[in-house]
Amino acid sequence: MDLFQQLISELNLPKISYVKNELLLQQSTPINSLLFCQDADLTIFHINEHGKEFILGVDTNYSGPLGEMEFFQRKPYSTLNVKANKAGYLYKIPKLKLLELLREKPELTILLLEFISTRYNKNITKLMNNITLSARINVIEQILELKQHSNSPLFKIPVTLKAKQLGITDRCYRQILQVLKKENKLIKQGHEFELLDEKALKDEVLYTEVDK
Figure 1 (tube, rainbow, N blue to C red):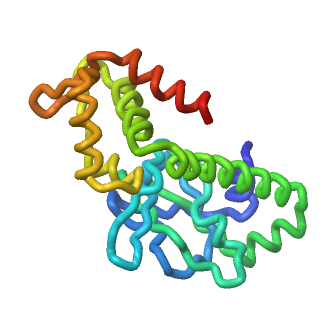
Figure 2: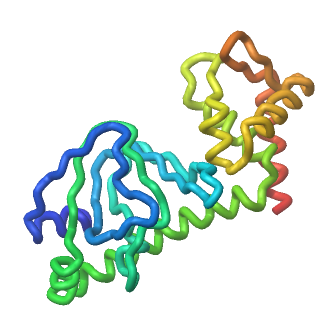
């Protein structure tokens, strides 16, 4: 039994259903309970002061906590929005009940800190890659990932979604695609794309990672 299954069992928490497109966490709103979801498909995004949306991550089949970094702060307000991409259920762990349980069972505290720090390191690594790698390399990595998950040579590129994930404009993303097409590494057929030189794209990403 993993950490959060232990917490659910110990605190006898009920399931709480949510629907597709529901905001499980909303930016700048208080976090009074630690949320734990199972097999969730989520979009994590931030809206800046100008109303521009930046997608920071898309998780599929995610099981784990939400808002855990803010939950233990003195003034726990969500810094991000978390939207459900499909219906599901979650558990809410009230702060006082959780703190009481952690005092009774300090071994759970160690497991919780380990989980939080591991997830934090993963998210920071992803963020640093977005900052330090060029937009072109990030786009190529996304294209290679989309091709990997495609069952045919042709695949779609959701430009708006992918651009938001990288924090760049649709126009910038499309310009990179145009350059790759001119270099004969990519071709567009209708609404789908096909790689013409997958090896060259992989080599470019590999060279950049080694150079770092």
